[in-house]
Image (tube, rainbow, N blue to C red; front, side, top):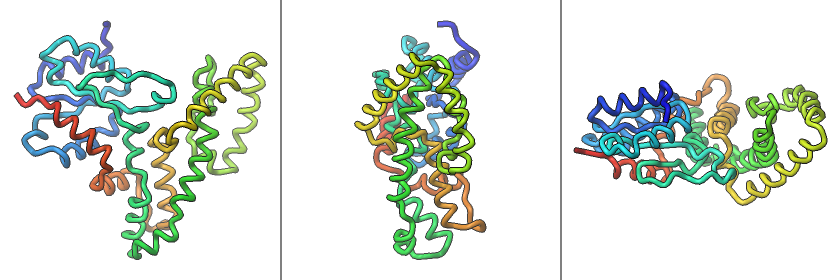
Length: 278
């Protein structure tokens, strides 16, 4: 396999280190993963691991393919990737004890819960937890998000698979929660559909039906792109806090990181079990 600069750099780092390297996708998640491992690993094991971002999922899995037949490099390697839309697209997982998949779209999906939101609002407003819980309407908010994404995801996945994706498919989903912004994009969407022609429109409709049927079989919240979902949730929290108490996404993740869900702890435990301590 011909190596790009990112992969060549990863291989070089493996050759030069005595530590285990956990390869992840997103550079912005590196600090968060480091904190998670620091929490979950004994100190002697935490000292034996470092994290490197390879920018995207393809690079992480390509790196695995490069080193899997080299025992010296393989033994020091660990690979962690997001699940993304793999379940919906029926993309098989790499079956290897050194390759770990999140069970949701991305890391941020693990930090969406009523408990986290109510806790932050009650702490910042110095109000009792139960009082905020009554006002927070988490289930109502989540139902709204589910309903909107139940329409959005089949359309997005279908358009994405066509040769000429629509520009609007790359827009932040907040436009669908703000009617005035959404209306601005309607003419562009209509023109796009007109420009497809009858055959591609027919194919698009068929793909939308197929993807909708698949999405009906899953918990859609797990497959909403996590950064989008978390941004929407922080927006909801800030609506309760008011201008003087606003929090950022990073603040939210820092606060909630100490109350990890069990499924994420299981993945971290699997990583711990595969550390090479020689």
